[in-house]
Length: 325
Image 1 (tube, rainbow, N blue to C red):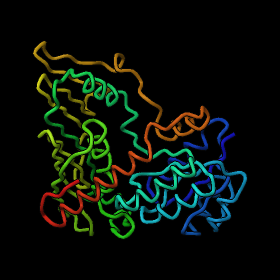
Image 2: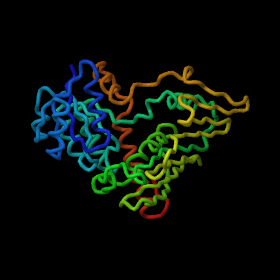
Image 3: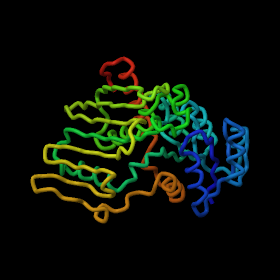
Image 4: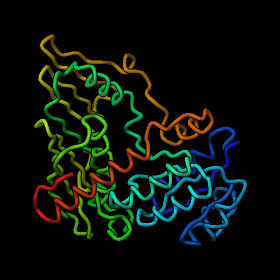
């Protein structure tokens, strides 16, 4: 039995994560802590588990093996470090922190305590993405010269995101810091760490945080990756294109499950059946790693790299210039 504490319902994904943990056989949600006592008590009643107002007491409980961190990002450092020092496995929502320095502080404690750690990178579980990585690594596209990733929705323009998601003190930023994490960690995964970053962020919905964003990542060899996101685009399908000296690979959620490979040999639709299922989603993947005592595929080093990239992206947007990664 894996026993889990849910730490805050602040994030829009927290409730979903809690329900996922509760639905897995031999996993039990034992206690909830929330910085908002009213919200925490209501959630605990709904989950039929304890509510504990003291984080210290939660982390001291013997019936807590792991924690799911859904707090605002500005609380991640204190909460995750406390959990790791208490010997609890850590599952956390992205991003790890606003800055690389703070992310590295968290990472160092994770390394020292050796607690299992997984950050939620759901797009890296997709079979299509894993297949893309394989093709890139095998040189099917030749030398990769350009990549573009877009992930955007209408959470600001249609008004369904909570106001807290535009509170830069809690979030560290707006659309790029939240939804833009997905294109950013995919750029890191598929192309590696860049040399320079140039960003343009605007606020179309006027809610106090960036909601229409592009970051351009420049690599030492001259390759370019473009990371796009926003909270003001309705029905904008998730998409990736990777271009190289021998061909291109594209995927788009309007063509579910498939990849399109375009080389001198012609255009080939790689079907979902050929690609396969990929990895489990982050919550069951975390549980699987705990049960089988195997390392997480989304490591604390991955989490630090994303925080470093986000810090550079926001610095570029603020200073209106290209900055070093």
